Image (cartoon, rainbow, N blue to C red; front, side, top):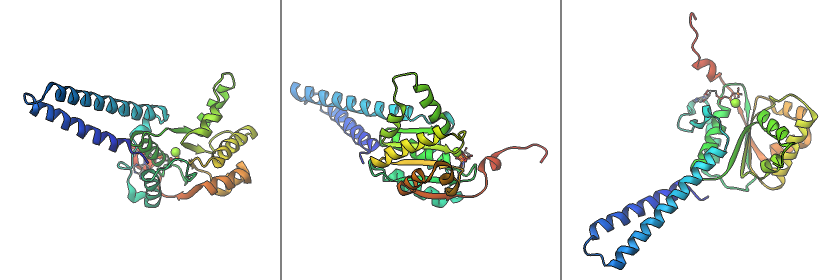
Length: 243
Ligand SMILES: Nc1ncnc2c1ncn2[C@@H]1O[C@H](COP(=O)(O)OP(=O)(O)OP(=O)(O)O)[C@@H](O)[C@H]1O
Ligand SMILES: [Mg+2]
């Protein structure tokens, strides 16, 4: 996978080198040599700016909310969820488009599922410069409803994204429509080998019962399932007076 952070670092090193050659060579440079070095430096700067812009655009477009923008692997306490952490970190480090392989994080509230899904998203957008859509399932459904009255084809966009993160599957109000939308998106991605990450409080059995066997079997063929158990970190971090 093209790693834009690494490319940027080597461009930066080359730019610094070119500038220092220009400084040192000042008087001994011929006009032509000087012109060539200057042109090279300008080109490197342009390339760097373009990569910077791409990384920023990917981060902004991913739709990760303010709270989770800063959630990364480094500020996740691995000791609390070593298995889930390792699987998610490995996925991010080795991310390849069109593998069709994703992750489903299943478990109780406050166990770090959204944090890990955001850490993956933030890494892939900012470090790899790849487009990711991160969305709460309720928000995704609302976007689709809103798009009924516009030319925007939200469902098609969701199917095309190099990585789609569906956060909090199962919090939406039950309806045949939302179940059909999930099938449509999952099946589209399944057929095109597009990776998907899902977080949910529903157990695998509840997912099957709620969304039907066809959706369930596609999700579990595409995704590695991780059960995330443990204490609610939100409660651990909360402050109560008079306890
Ligand atoms: N292992 C961890 N290390 C650091 N912070 C954590 C860890 N686990 C959870 N947190 C923090 O606790 C809060 C709750 O975690 P998160 O939102 O990821 O839980 P969740 O499993 O998605 O819960 P829910 O099922 O209710 O959506 C977040 O602020 C998150 O950053
Ligand atoms: Mg969550």
